Image (cartoon, rainbow, N blue to C red; front, side):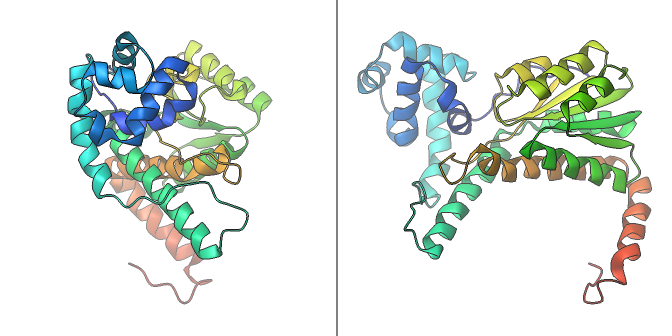
Length: 296
């Protein structure tokens, strides 16, 4: 697999939401001002933004460059374009309170998941998806690594690939992952799932797989994480807002599963002649137990 180039620049607002809690203090102040009103910031001068964030113009420039922009002028242009979509999207924000009615909880969770999926769709690099799908179709086998809550996402992708006849295995335990990854070769693909990109039990086996010559893919919310830097390709998922009642394991899952579905469809498109009869056969195999189901 050809390593991912730096040509793709993820949209600014999803990237800021994904990395806000990892930014240095001065950069975080700028990011908070931007996220509070991106449309207004797009009309500010760099001096105005620095003053509003109680920081220096140099800090504004450094944040712009961290986001893949050449400087503040390019950041303003990006914000102007992205804030149009932000303005027309309904906003229901805020943590879920203990006394919230069920209807309010539904509205808040729905709004957060919808934003997470929208941001992920915008931030996901099409070229990266294509490169990973190409690699999976031709791989000797695909290993999907995830620990804890990410393990359910890893299992979902592995089972999907198995269903269309592609050799795949979910690795959801660290020792098993480590001993499996040291035996990989350049004919294999490892997809590593971690919201933070810093989970030791995911990063360690991934680094082993890379050293063994396997193609490596990070599915993460953190494009600058240790995991992302260790991999050939990065599939970016933007988690929802982490709160006391919706920890990262919950807020990141919908976006990760969205990326899994996009990747799976891309794989099926490339391997339709093999996939179609197997998908049909699996549907037929269980249809008798679901008499109410009709083939779409």
